[in-house]
Image 1 (cartoon, rainbow, N blue to C red):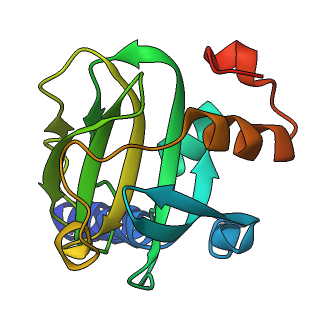
Image 2 (cartoon, rainbow, N blue to C red):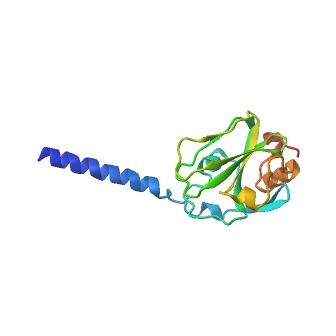
Length: 171
């Protein structure tokens, strides 16, 4: 009898954890309705959300069911360093583009839904990351060596009330 009660408690607590993991926390379901920006990389124009604050960067594209082909999320860091992006609670297969401090796309990696192993950069100078749907870099003609405008990134930061100089970008 005690064994059955203990087993029941374990199963109930396990199911509770799974449910919480699969569903977005309160208020996160529609966080992507925030302001987006027209963003150019190479010759492609993408509608992008800006992830600047640590909480925004941590949340990323978690819990999204889908994303339009020409949409993405652009992450900005204070300085260039190695990066490792993981796919916790991310349901959409992604291409993860690592961009150097001078705005050059230097790496593109595949991100698999729910993969917790992480997608590490090879470079130690990654200041920006652009996440797009899997295959979107190729479909949109975005290639290694393509650039983003640092002035454009500064303007996006300003429109969100951030000081670009705090991110080592031109004001």
